[in-house]
Figure 1 (cartoon, rainbow, N blue to C red):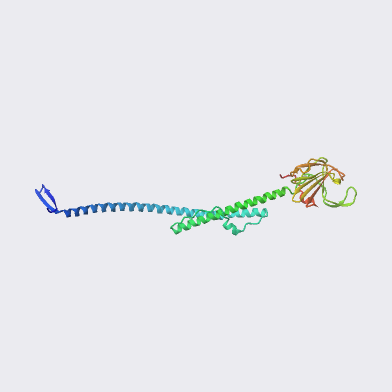
Figure 2 (cartoon, rainbow, N blue to C red):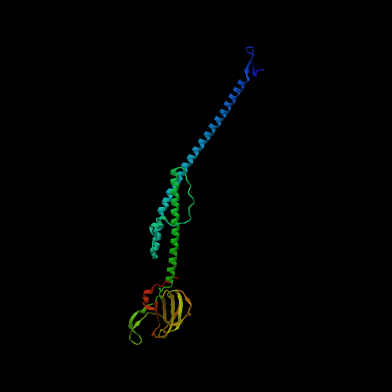
Length: 306
């Protein structure tokens, strides 16, 4: 029996009844055609929809990318401005180093700074313009970080220098041992008031009423406290750095041997002991064992700095 497909056509309007016998293979061909057409239509619709969504996504990404590039460029400009403004810190650093007698940091070192924490690996972007901006930002950040660490190091050096200078200053005789009292006899050759011979006077005589408080002129330790021949009751303070000060003709000594003293501390009272004809303080400054003019190390200000 031949494989045929019978198709019956019926039309009531025309009172028609017809039977068609078609090869079965033709049915398969037509069915395959309709199935293929349907699947192709669905596939084309899906692809078209997908392309539409992809295009919309790409448009959004491009817009976001433009905004990102604009922000990156703004950040890059801000970093360049920050680098220029850092010159003020460099100028300030130079002023501070000049004041404290320190050598300036060379401009070539400032231009690159010193190594700090290394920046992570830089991302690689396909777009050359974006990659250029990102590279400039990373470079600016690296330089700024280097300058920051260099400024930090410089500030530590300046601080140490200040501490050293303040320590030296606090141990350098500089204030008046009898604030407000007048110097009545200076350093140098003079006619001795007792035997009338011309002799070298190794210090300053400062007139003051008996019992007036005598102040230490710098920080140090008492290296001598007691009777010292023609000096009478005397206090000698060792300030370190080669400095020593002597306070002679005292009425009363208020410190002991090897006792630490601070600038402005009361260490004795004015008297007229030893080789003296009236109440006064004989004040000497000795540098590395040499008696020098105390006037260079005395201030007429009544202010004491601690």
